[in-house]
Amino acid sequence: MEEAERKHPTLPVPDPSDEQQQQWVKFLSELDSIFHDHQEGMRQVLVRHELFSLDRLTEKLEGLQRKAGLVPDWKEKGIQPGGTPEEHFLLSYLFYAGVVFTPDLEIHIEFLQQAAKENLVPALLVLGDLYEKGGRDAEGRTTFAQDTTKAMEMYRRAANKGPGPGHSTGAFRLGLMYLDGQVKDRDVTPGGSKADEIQEKGLELIRLAADRGHRQALCKLGQFYYSKKMWRQAAEYWHKAVWLRRSSDAKYRLYKMYKNGTKGLPLDIARSEQFLPRRQRPIQFQEEKNEKDGQEEQEAEEVDEDDERSGKAATDKGIRWVISYVSVAVLGTISGLLLNVLVHQW
Image 1: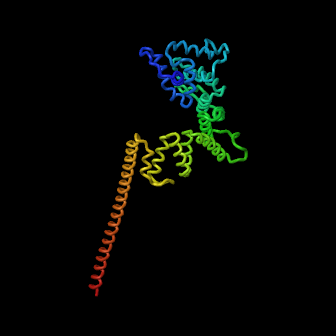
Image 2 (image 1 turned 30 degrees about the horizontal axis):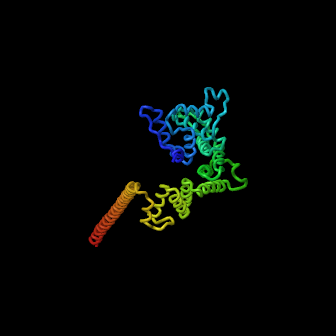
Image 3 (image 1 turned 90 degrees about the vertical axis):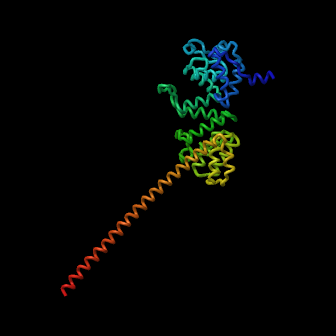
């Protein structure tokens, strides 16, 4: 029981009047959403330092800082960070998000890079994302220079770390960079078809992630094959995304395919409704109603246009008929007058 409590400690109850305690407990409660697949490693660091207990919280956090070498003038003194890669990554996040500590971008980047140097997968992924997109502050000033080559290096190192969530995510993000065209000529075999080879490399990496059950990779392959009108391959990956990862996006796409009975899947209303989550049904039905209303309105406008065209045609026809009738009548009158003149002359 005691061992289970250490692995999965319960959240402490903060003092309502202590803002620092409240902030820390909120952070502990959001570990899963903050660190995703890597939250267990962070949880172990927190357990090791007894940070699930609020007793002497400030003292314990200061001890974690000292262990990492974060002392006054640490940069000027050239102090090298101490501690484990997991501790560095945790400190990097705390200084980035301003949890208990005052936000400090320099410390955040320093310890993120230190954890990445030691090949900690979550640090490689975060640093790769920073290099890929670059960083800006609230006023739009550059805080981290974009570098797609370094981004690819970070993702590749994460992908090569072996089986696990980080390996899958690294392969997926690297594959996306190939598909998005964020590669250099040196990444392509000389003499080959650049576009085809880049695309195939990207797909190979994303398939690698999908084979390990990566949800986004499964959905991305479904979308890719759908865009190529390869309906059955698209449905195959979306089915995997539903059964392996419970992807709501894949459920919705399969719902539409079965509901319409087109694009390679049979019409199956009952099965289509199995894929649409119940909470989405009222919203979806309203969207379909709006779509149907829009179609009916468009059809009505088209009918009006047809009527207008028909009316114009009828008017034109009537005008032509009147002109013809008047012409015949006028010609008849003229003929009559000429006949009378000839009779009188005789």
